[in-house]
Length: 132
Image (tube, rainbow, N blue to C red; front, side, top):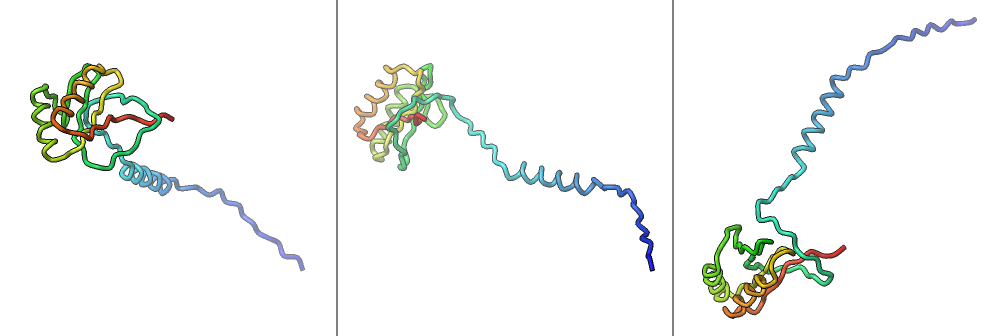
């Protein structure tokens, strides 16, 4: 006895509403979990060096821009205020980190370095980026 197969092909419809919901949720998830950190500060281009090391200790950071302006804690200071801040740093035995732009005047960097040495600070470092 032969049985006849009754096969009906129906065209189905794919409901894309759940697909859109899932894609939207994934988009929100990735937007919330990604971190876009924009640190406000002074824009400088550090010089590159092959022999640089990572410094772990807390430092007093002095920034010298390409126009030879001096900043401490993102505030521009003059030589007198720098001298008083260096006296305080010498009393607290802090290290100094000089972040000088690669286009900054070498004379200004040496002037700041000499002020640090005159106040009795022995640990003075210059920030660089590593060459790749």
